Image 1 (cartoon, rainbow, N blue to C red):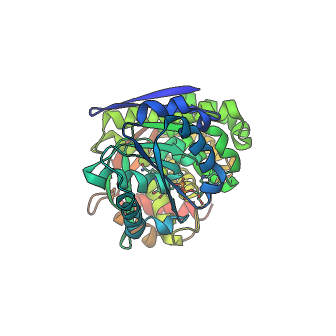
Image 2 (image 1 turned 135 degrees about the vertical axis):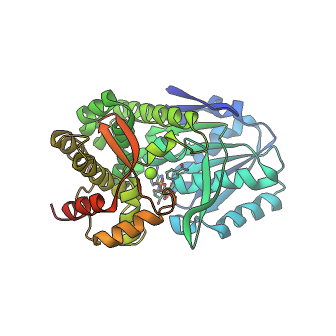
Image 3 (image 1 turned 90 degrees about the vertical axis):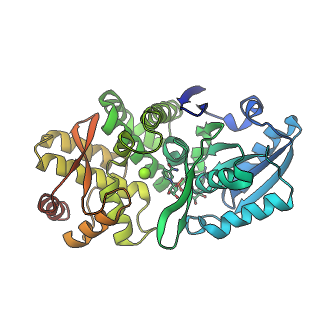
Length: 360
Ligand code: NAD
Ligand code: MG
């Protein structure tokens, strides 16, 4: 097992990464304060892993409330959150009750938000079960739900007591979901660590196969990078924006095609190829660097060819991304592999890249 320590102003907490951590009572024990635990999961994950986690917790003698949510992003909304509150109140969960999120980013985001709100805040533990959740959504303290008028528009910053990432559970993950997680791993290397980027290139086949050692190492380094960026900028005022590399284009693809057609990680993978093209257009990187990034994304079984939406539509969608300010499009660009920065890019430059990206 490897541990990454997240060091934040308010509190520090560990991310444990390894195989079969779901069975290790001693990893959960230090983080469960009161007499009650609420295990929150979804209908897909419950039959796969909930019984195992329940028996891991059994020796601790806590009263256990289990809450099973319907599966899917479509349920990451107010009604599901209220369903959690109703269940917690009916079962008389108190202020010391620890919520445990067992699932992907959807379960993690909604459980974290429930923990931030319930009785003005209760502790929670993340047990991420998708690669994306292990390397991205469970780290950083952003929690929330969707509103019909916008994704992730309601939420809170609420840090977990611990993240327990059992890489063995990834074996049941569908291949597309695994690739989507790899996109965020590649992103971490591209924006912050050239040596890690090289390492991913060398180990991409092992990662595609779900090789244990390679997966643990990739999760560790990605968490470390995200934790460092977040620790430097907990409330998203500066450096944290770099984590959005590939996301402005990706967001346009996700919304332009209609949510759910491409997975978030697929859109981000293609978005990174587009951001690399833009970086080259601006003379920041050479074509060899751009090709390396594109090859790696293709090797991770992610799309590299941007869907045709039309430049006007792309620009519209990129502008309404909540991460951009009013009439400007701030783009995350590469200075080189391992270093990114934010720059405001004029529309005509973006148009040229959008036209080329949707053709070549
Ligand atoms: P997800 O939670 O929808 O999981 C994907 C699918 O895999 C689901 O059907 C799920 O039931 C299933 N699944 C999960 N674990 C499994 C396993 N071990 N075996 C088999 N099936 C399994 O999707 P996700 O990609 O994990 O998360 C996406 C969500 O995360 C989005 O809502 C996004 O907004 C959010 N997110 C949040 C942050 C953050 O900082 N809070 C960052 C990135 C993404
Ligand atoms: Mg992302």
